[in-house]
Structure formats: C-alpha cells, structure tokens
Image (cartoon, rainbow, N blue to C red; front, side):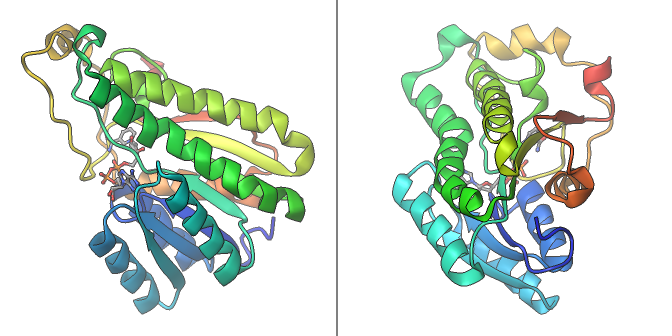
Length: 253
Ligand code: NAD
C-alpha cells in the first residue's frame, strides 16, 4: 500500500449518498484520488464537485454496479485516470421490504442479492488483477448488523449481507499471501437516505418487532466512514478478514 501518504487510487461504490459519500469525502481529504461510483448521476456529480472544491481529486462513474459493463467502466476509469486500484470500498446497497422468507418475491430476492452481493463480487473480481499485479490492495466491504443476526432486516437483505461476510473472509484467506487485505464494517442504524419500504401485509415486520430492540445510538455516516478509512489504511496492516460491528454495541447485547 502507498499508505496514508496521498495519491492512492480508490473506488467507492454508492458514493453519492450516506456512508459512501462520507467515505469518499474523507478519503479525498487525506489525498486519495477517488472514483465516485453510483447509480444516481446527479448525486455522484455533486460529490465530485464537493471533493474538487475542497482541493481533492475525483471522477464520477454512474450506472448499476450489478451490471458487468458498469463494473468494467468503473475499473477502467480507476486504472486509466489514477494508475491502478489501491483500495476498493464495496459500499453500495439497498434495503429489502423487511419481508419474511415466504413473502419474498423473486424480483425482490434477485434485486437485493444482485446489488448487495453480486455487485461486490463483480467489482472485487474486476480489480483483483490490478491489485495482484501491484502486489498490494485493500478491500473494505460495507456489510451490516444484518450480517450478524436474523433480526435486523428481512430475509433477502439478511441473506445478502451474510453473503458479504463470506465474500470478505474468502478474499482475506485466498489473497493473504498477495498483499491484499479484505475486511468489512457492519453498521448498525445509520442516518442516511437508505429507504425501508416495509411491506406491512407481510409476516416480517410483525415477527421482527419484538426483536428490534437494544439498537443503541443511530450513527452518523462519518462515524462509519472513519472505520472504513482505518481498515483501508496501513494502520490496519495486520487486520484481514475482520467483520467489525460499528453499532454502539448492538451486537454485544
Ligand atoms: P444510501 O441510500 O444513503 O446510499 C446508498 C447509495 O448507493 C445511493 O447513493 C444509491 O444510489 C447507491 N446505489 C444503490 N444501488 C446501487 C447500484 N445498483 N449501483 C450503484 N449504486 C447504487 O444508503 P447508506 O445507508 O449509505 O448505505 C450504504 C451501505 O450501508 C449499504 O450497503 C447498506 O446496506 C449499508 N448499511 C446501512 C445501514 C443504515 O442504517 N443506513 C445499516 C447497515 C448497513
């Protein structure tokens, strides 16, 4: 890693809003050059403007990251503009409808799995050759409290975020000899734009209700970003495969 000493090439997905935006701003503020990847062009452009106004370097790439063509564009932009990929933050994600399994439609299942799990798989696969060629790299995945328990979301989101843990651990083991680390943050409730459109006719919300307790304080996106920055930095050089709750102790209760 080039460490915290400026100029790393960094990709942040879902960087147009919430945790991803906060991570992109903070990484750029320490001198990293950031590919701001998001579905929403207006949000991505706004974050790039914010970074540039603060004196940093960023470029927006917009599109659905569950599509290979978009993943290829994101990767090519990092390589062509910034000379490689030092850090990948797989952060883009969507909530589900909090439905219990029998109420989950094929459409909901496929969409949530594609965005939350397949997209990080596709982008990690795309950047790995560049990290391997460089002999270094850090991948930080935004998992969730729903990676740690069955009571934080519906079946689709819970399964997708448990999958992100598996992806992270597999990466950590398979590439530990190549100078590449992979870790995940598990945010508890965080004040962002993420939308829960709970299906009140479904079984899930009523079943979850009694278990939706001891959540702790809702965090600010910057508190999540600070941990992402740490895991992506040389300060975390011996941390590999860690699944780190950032949840005011929710997971400890
Ligand atoms: P957010 O909605 O504020 O930001 C998510 C961003 O991802 C948006 O800008 C959206 O346009 C983008 N995005 C969504 N689907 C995309 C796709 N297919 N391709 C490209 N971009 C896409 O939400 P957030 O809370 O900042 O979420 C960031 C991550 O944190 C997600 O993975 C989410 O699951 C996770 N998380 C959030 C919370 C919370 O309470 N906010 C808790 C646990 C985990």
